[in-house]
Amino acid sequence: MPYDPNFPTPNTLADANAMRGQLNALNALIAAGTLAGVVIDGIVTLNPGEPATVEASLVAGVLHLSFGIPRGNDGGQGPQGDTGAAGEVTNAALDAAIAGTARNPVAVALLSLTVSDPPTQSELQQVVDKINELITAIFRAPV
Image (cartoon, rainbow, N blue to C red):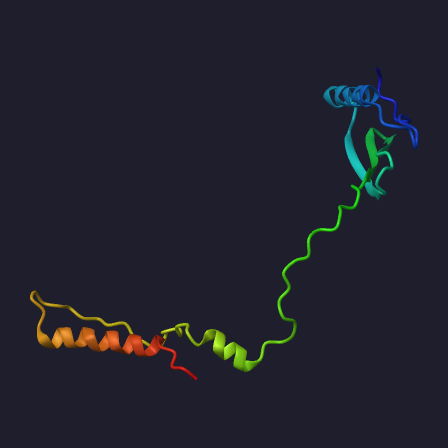
């Protein structure tokens, strides 16, 4: 079946065998180098139940296509979702929500310490002091 740029005519129901023949004919044109390209000129959403459409034209060796694709039917009503309280978050509610969280400990400087084996009392005290500094930095006191 040779390619027919006038098939299908507008509002023609799609027929699988006829469309397969058109596509095979286009494939043959492409393989032979006869078809210079394909351009999609547009896609239109049709109402549910309307048949899908395609319009084709051949201009200077370029195939132009326009499609009409029906959307699906609307689904049924789903179950009611869980809704939270509406409105803005107050400062008090925000403070209460973050009260138990840690702060960002960016103010704690890294400890650069070489520890002997066994560590001295002074070296252990430096480590303990740095741990205490870190705990103080991340602890969020109750408001």
